[in-house]
Structure formats: C-alpha cells, structure tokens
Image (tube, rainbow, N blue to C red; front, side, top):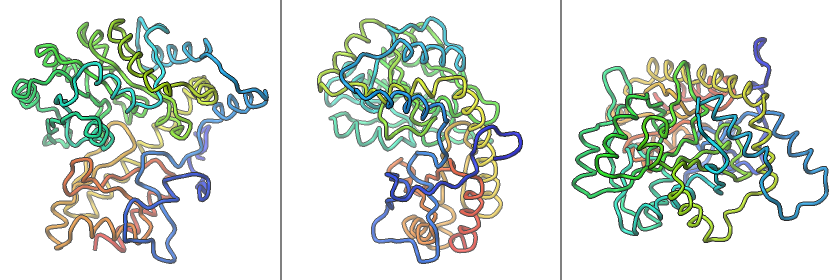
Length: 402
C-alpha cells in the first residue's frame, strides 16, 4: 500500500483454487493462455482486492457461536443500511419498512417487473445493456426495447430523450429499467438528467426499476444521485435495487436488498419475491453487510474509489495514446471500461473475436462486449492492483495491438 493509504490495494492475491470464477475459468472457447503468461483477470465484475477487514471480523465473530438455525434480520442490518444511504447518498425519510431482502439484484428486478408487467410486455432499457438484463428478461418472457446512449463530443455518454419517448409511445411501454451508474458505460447520471428521464416516465405512466448496485463506486468528483430522490413520481413509482456485493466483493455470499417507498408496490413485490420460498437471507451474508457498512467500510470505500480512479485514468490515457483506432470513454463510476474496437479491427483486417483471443493468449482475460450490445466491443475490469493494470497494457502493446 502507499504511504497515504490505510488499506492494502497493492498486494496481488493468489486466487487459484479459491473458488474464484475470474481466475479459474476462461470466458472463451477454443483459446488458452500460452505458456509463460500469468492470468490477469479483467472480465467478470468482481475485484482482485482483499475486502475490508471489518467484514471478516463480523463474520468470524458470528461463526464463533456454533448454531446456525432459523433467524430474523437483526436491527443492525436495517440500521446499517439506513445510515449508509443517509450518510453517503443524502437520503431522507428511509425507514426499515422500505427495505426488503433480495437474493440478487436481478431477482429483484424480475420480481418488480412481474408486478409491473405481463409476460410478453416490452421493457425499455438503455444500450449498451448489461448482459444480465438481456438474458434474464428474455428468459422470463419480456421483450427488450433498447434506447441507445450516445457519446457526445466530450466523450460523455448521454441519454437520447427523444428516442426514449418515441420508443415508449410507439411500443406502449409501461416499465423501464434505469441503470445508475450505468453498466457497462460507467456513466453517473446527473440530477437534471434523471429528472428529465423521470418526467418522460411519468408522462407515459412508466414504472421504473432502478439498478443502483454500482452506486458506491464513483470516480473523481462525480456524485451519485438516487433515482428515487428527484421527484415525487420517482419516489413513489421506482423500485431501487442495491447490494454491498460490487462495492466489497461479496457476490459469492449472496444478498441484495430493495428500497421501495410506495407501500402498495412494496407489498406486491415482496409477495412476488416470496413465491419461490427461497428468497431468504443467509445469516453470514447479513453479518457481512453489517461488517461492510461500519465506519471502516466508509473509509475503505473512499480509498477504493481513489484507487479505481487512478487505474481508470491511467488505462484510458494509455489506450488513447497507444492503441490507435480504439475508442474509450473515461468512466464516471464502476470499475469497467468499454472499448470500441471497430476502427482498429477494420484497419487491421481482424475480427473482434480474433482480437479478443489474442489478448487471452497472453493472459489478458477481458470480456466480449457483444452480449452487452456493443458490436465490436470489449469490456475490461480495472479492479485489480495498479501493477497488474500496467502489466496488462504492456502485454497488449507488445503482443496484441500491433
């Protein structure tokens, strides 16, 4: 760690054989890492940092008691969530009645859509689109209508409000997924932008599911604004989904939660989520959240965002200066980059598959952007020690973008 850091974001963890999908699996068929190259995991959205120590302490303290029977969520669970959103997001009026457990954000999204929609209904999403939305909506009988985001002259992703309104009107849409910060573009929406989107949703009586799982990972001086905070309509017609899993690398523990202020919508979504009889909290994931949302977790998250900002600034500058024909926008949130390799592939007579495989062969395990509706794209995870980001860029320069 550096002199001004309290926590360790520099040690390279050996995750092999430690139940880590990121290092134990390649997301491509018919390609392997060549001998002599170590694996640099830059694909699935988890982090190669040790989590905040207060999480392990909370869990091990609980494990020291040798009984793990049926339980109810502790007051500390709800109090920790309320304090987290009050302090970090300036949320007011949040009480425990508004908070409900979800096994995962996608499960919560689907439970909300099952309340807002009928099977076969059309749902508005922005493109590029998180792969989880695409697969889960199709698998559950919903038709996706995409409203493309547009890169402006400053390299900032923007919503096309005219397109949104036309798609909603022409397709008789009454439900939308609003991803904030946006995955995979990394856009942190400003209050005025959310207000304008919500005004369109209100005009056409569109119910909103806000995926805000990335809300803690904000780069530079950007500010996350909860979608529910921008208007009374947004507050009463939005089901917001959160989790500590992206922030603290807890995906393997399972455990998300919703915030819903409208009691009618809340009751119906909670009923829908309960129908599987499996949407129940794990006692250790509860303690993980309590451990994460302690004072140490606040400090750790701030340091994490600083580390990720450095990684993203370095990677974006390096890509722009070294990989001619590759476009990248500096993310405002998340730890993912979305590379547009259209021009490079055209200039070099390569397919995006060939380019992706070239990276994998030298151990840079990045992710195919096509399932995210980026036709010649690559998604790259920067949540790893800076030395590995440097090593990945050096390998790409020497062996791939040549």
